[in-house]
Image (cartoon, rainbow, N blue to C red; front, side, top):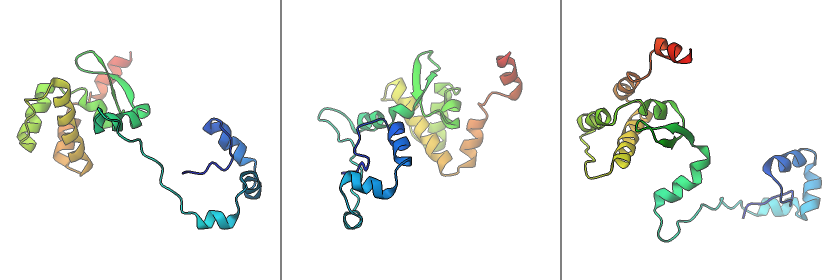
Length: 157
C-alpha cells in the first residue's frame, strides 16, 4: 500500500502544496511513523488495475491511459483518440489502403479478417514499433505524408 504522508484526502495539487510547507519531521509526527519504520518497510509497488471478468486486457490498458489521449479527427471523419505524438498525427494522414499495402509489402502482414478500425490500429502498431526500433526506411515513408510547409501555411490563413 502506498503511503500518503499527509494523511489528507485532497487533490494532488493541494497535497503537494501542503507538503511543501511541512518539514520531514512534521510529516512523520502527523502520520505517527518513525524513520526506522520507513527504512524497515519496503515500498510496495503501485497496484495495477486488474482485468474485470468479461473485459479484454486491451480494454484495461486503454482505461489506464485514456486520460493521456488527444482527441483527433479520423480519416473517416469520426472522432478518434491517440497519444498525439508525431507518429499518431501523421498516421491519420495516410489513407488506409496505402497503409495496409505498405505493411503487407514491408512486414508481410495482412489483417483482412479484421474490421477497418482494428486493421488500421494493427498496421499503425507495426509502423510505430519499427520507428521506435530506429527503422529509417519506415520513418522516411511516414514522413512523406507530412504536410509540406507551404500547405501548413495555407491552412493557417
